[in-house]
Image (cartoon, rainbow, N blue to C red):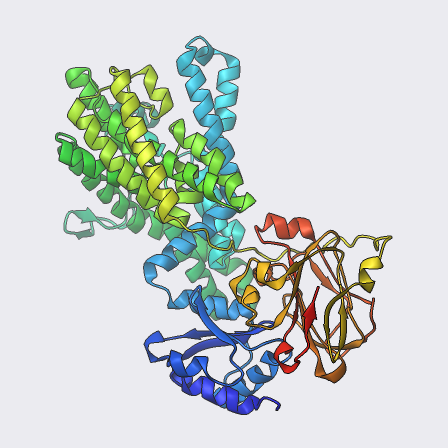
Length: 636
């Protein structure tokens, strides 16, 4: 008996809390994808037994109902009719699911979206910086050579101009003009501003401004207008080198201003009025509000650190808090504490705290690099961890640990324990400016320092390894189409029957090794929820029609095709596992819904290299989705 699509849709809506409880809805080749406002209103027991629903699970903020190929699109059409909603894409659903997440998760995602594209630059620079600094310490003569100065300049470039890189990437994420974002980033490190790393250095301040007071001058732009002790519009002439969060906030604000102006400024003058007003207002608000706010925060953190560092408990607190100050770009101020310690006693007891925190982030990042299945994650995590081991933690924190967050927490725990150990044992250094492995060149107790690194890094590694679970990577669609290989010379596999029933034979659609569907590395396919069939480990990249029939569905993401044959035989050919996340990148379809096809006709090509690079299994799934309708189905 044919499924009543209308009834199925009505029962789904009734058991997910009605129209008012649905934020967004879309479908893929086999599943109805829903974003629900309040999951507590879902009647799961009834929903699982709705006729037409073959399975249900929640993933990435989505409620996914398994309906089946050739059927889901019809149920979805009725679903839209019942709810009065308009058709949406999977990207719309992802956006709606993201909007349902807690604010802190959305903020972390935004931070990750900003840093993922710029990771190659900061990972390479961070690793190079660590190596150059270490060589300069090991071979002092090398530190005074032209090669050292040249390599140091190359290595430092990405970090010296980090606000510019971050600003451009943030403008892309928040939907603003990339070049206006670049201008805002450049303004924040302009050559007329004191380098942020010299804020605590009176000699550097005097030399830069040609003064003798050691106090950074300000621009008082709004007169003596005060809020408490704060002179509004008084801009301290110091840059934002090494800062990240203020830059991202500034560019987010810039994008909001730009979008508002585009809507309200007449088109005739929009071209020059909008950019001018956007940059001017953003830079003023950044320096007049964001800058002073972070300067005050920096002063509070510095004052608190000076107090906490005096005892083991406080050292533990700072070991946990240190990576957060790296995230905010406040960590350079600790040089003031270290310089004061060396002036007072000749021993720098802050350095072991910073080393414990940094080496813990190294351990957590290394754990991700070794555990991850995704080649992309490995390629970022392993060199980033090496950079962190040499004292440059930004690549590890922004590229891996903060992005996945659990490794960041593991690093905080390791940093806490290591810092407490360092305080109890009284480890100290004779200089400042280096941590991690290069710290051996300045440390007074190398054995205890080795234990500190082992404890902090090792503990963070173990915790991160066991609490982090790899999620499917987000892959952006690419413009380049998959390369289509020539047809294989040997097409004998097309004569091999892989599924047979009273309705007819289904032949092997792609060259490769045939495996049982229960061996497919996906619980939904392996359980036969979508029907029984086979999996094929492909040796080529072309999918052919396995029998004469009609194309019943083509996935929007191009990775799956449904074919209807004799006696309503419904077949799903699904290339790869979770390749829906690739959004069509690497796939080319040669047919459309409604096309008549004959056995051996090309249906699709796929780029195996791209599937592997995305960290997805490339198994081609071939399922007879209505196998329950036949009594004599055989496989192999």
